[in-house]
Image (cartoon, rainbow, N blue to C red; front, side, top):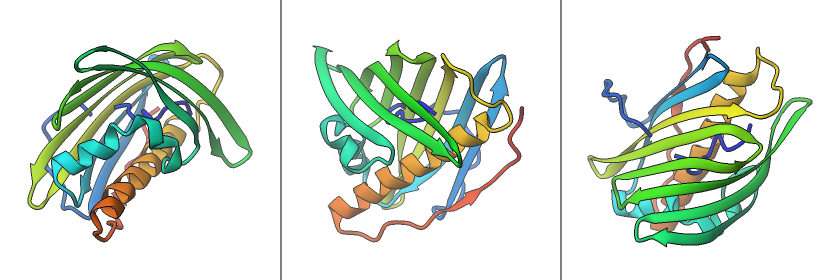
Length: 197
């Protein structure tokens, strides 16, 4: 499902203050609300915020380490802290395949917040916020995504599919953070919760 990245990437973590789970636990939930799928996630990266930020904003190389992302490029930088990016890829779940493409505007507050909003593509709506918080020797990532595709998605699998996409995307991103810093990639235990329809 398109850009559960916000894409990624980048898509991007909103921070309702909730209890912070232990570093090995990731808390990811998805709900369907009036045609939208809303995902909230709390995750942990074993690197400092500055190193985590470097990977989250590596848009030109993102397709090298994010699953299902075929291309990613920076189109322009209309402001000091504003970037316009284009990404293409495909999400898959069993027999289902969902190609996606998007042009997004990403607002950056270095090492703290990344906000992404869909401008064009095959998503009717896609906006996300990613927040970074120092925690111990690493970084807590809080992610919030609101997405509404322009095409039909089976309602019974939509939220679970997007939640799985967010999980897989961030596992790859956090793995890349760890690889670049020469530390062991975490093996998070996802705290699965029932998907609300």
